Image (cartoon, rainbow, N blue to C red; front, side, top):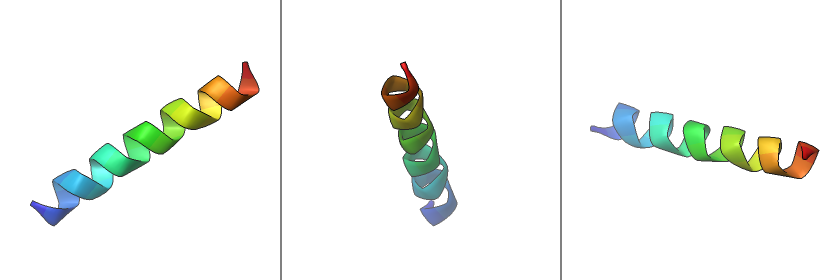
Length: 22
């Protein structure tokens, strides 16, 4: 359960980095 939350947070942070790059 905690692992899923961590994966979701990493996914969201990755998306945020892409948005900042663009």
